[in-house]
Each structure stands twice: as structure tokens, then as C-alpha cells.
Image (cartoon, rainbow, N blue to C red; front, top):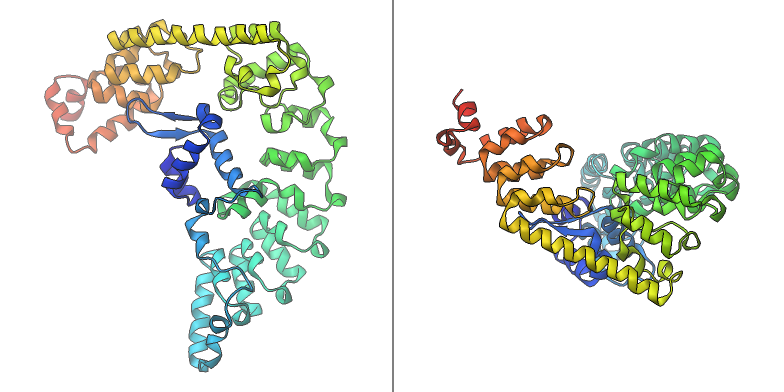
Length: 436
């Protein structure tokens, strides 16, 4: 996603996010990219996770990175006496009017209950809030929290389970929570709620952590793996799921990893883009040596920098072996520079670049922005919508090389432009299309 989309979705300040990325540029270098055409900065899932988790860490003191919406939230119980008691002098008519307003507001948004003084909250108001938004349970005064209310909250939103006192938790409640777990995140807003969502199994008492509950938790969030009993982690069912994620695969026993198994997993990582996001993260270093590193580098399964920038993975190499790994990376970099120079001379030279190179899409976008016709030399399965849009904007006739799945949308995008009429006079494919 783009920086702007990230800030909109998570309520962050774009200035602070850019500063955070700049401050951690070494860690995020390979997870933040800038489009050669639009100069738009985009971040991958690793960067999103890093930016969110970094703020949640206990040692963090970057107060500027909080959601703007949280800055004005007054924690329950900390409201000044003047504010809390201001309504005591209201007449009955005014109190009723305000209560009616509160009733309407808590139906819209779960955080609304947090803005109401505890002493003004009633059992009915809290129930109304929880029935509409289960996460409102966190703002209900203790005296109003009952098992019935907790059941209502969890049915509304699974993450509400994390706010339920242990004495009210039951097997049925937990089953309900994990049956609807996958839908809960879209209603989480604060960093605390997002954190609880990603680690919901943490709030399940040990006695209720059955194999079924644990597996459901792992299907939704890999972060739950650390709370799964060891007896389940060694089963084929769990290993099959854990191996697909760098976050959870580190919990797989070392004895499981063989050369063939690592190779198979790395190949799947490349197919799902995990390799670009996480590199070697999750694989035990004891499985590797210089010969295996070089073999996987040649097969484009790993990047040399995943090795020499990691103290963990480079520790199995001698100094001479490290130099050789670095040289492989330097040689590859120089080769890409030569190809880039050729693309600048003639965009059609994009056909000289190996399509399995992780930078291929960036180079291809550069090529089509420079010459739309270069799109014909990009493999069909690698032609993205953004790439096709850029190609057509440079050369309307490039629409002939756009995959069917994107063609109609790109044509509609052009129709919405103020200058679309100019294509009528280009005497090309779009001209005939727009005149019809």
C-alpha cells in the first residue's frame, strides 16, 4: 500500500510515518519502494507490520506516532471532577436529552462510550453500546460487567474476548470468538485493539486452548503461534500451516529442516513474494553453509544481502566466504546497472532482463513509462494494472497489449480524464473506440 493509504487506514500522521521510515531506512530499505513513474512511495506487509509493532513496543517513547484520534481520548476513570460532575446540576429534561444523544452516538462507534463519564453511564447505555459494537466492553464500568454482557460483546466482535474477565470466560464463549475471528480486525482501530486482535489466543485460558481453537487462531494470525501448546506444534497439520509464514516457521523443530525442505519452502516463498518481504527470516541458520547459500543465490531463491546483512545468517561463514558472497551481489548489481542503461537507451531492451529478478517489475515499469510499446515485451503474467495504465498514457496504442482483465477499466479511466477527447484525433485504437 502507499504511505497515504497506510496513514488513512491506521490514522497516522504522514509526516511522522515518513520520519519513522527515514530513521529506520536500514531495516526497511527492501520493504519500501518508490515508483519510477509516479514517485509514489509504497510499503509492503513487512513495513506495515514493523511500523505498527514498533509503536506498540514497551520501550517505545515516540509519542508523535500515536493515532490522532487517540490523542484526545481521556482514559476511563481519569476525567477531572469538574467534568465528571458537571451534569449533576442539570435538570431532568436536560439529562434525558443528553442521554438520548449518548444512546444514539454509542450505536455508531464503539469509542463513543469512552467519552462519557463513568458516573453518567447506565446499565442500559452500556448494553446499547456493546450490542452495537462489542469492543465497547472495554469502556464499561466494572459494576455493569456481567457474563451476559460479555457474551453479547464477544458475539459482536471476537476481540472483545480480550476484555472479558477470566471468571466469565467459558468454552462456548471462546468457541464463538474464534468462529468469527477472521472478521474482527476490520473493526479494530487503536494500536491496542490491533495488537489484541493479532494475539487473541493469549487471552484464552490454558485449559481452553484446544487443538481446534489453536489451529483457528493460527489461520487468522501467525502471531498466535507463541501461545500454542508445544504438543500441537509438532503435528503435520500445524507444521503445514506454520511453514508458510516466516513469523511462525521459526517455531518448527530444527530436525524438520532438510536441504530439500528448505529449497521447497524458498520456492514457495518466491511464488508468494515472501522472499522479497522477509528474506531468510524464520529458517534456522544451522541448516546453511557457503555451498548451499551460493546454490540458492544462483537459483534466485535468496538474495545475497539477506546473508551478509544478517549477523545471524552470516555467522556460519568464514571471512573469505563472506567476501565471495558480497562479490556475487556486486557483480549482480553491476549487471543490472548495465541493463538499466540499455533500457534508458531503448525501452525495448527490457527483454534483456531476467524476469525472475526481484527488481524486474520496477525496471519494466521504467521501460513502459518511457515507451508504452515496450509493454509488448513484458510477459503477460507480469503486466500489472499500474504498468498497463502507464504504458497507455505514454502511447494509446499500447492498449492492444493490455490483458483483458485490465483493458476495460483502463479505458474507463481514460474516459474520466478531462483531456480524453484528444484520443479521438490520434487515429488509433482508442480513436475508433471513443467515436463509436
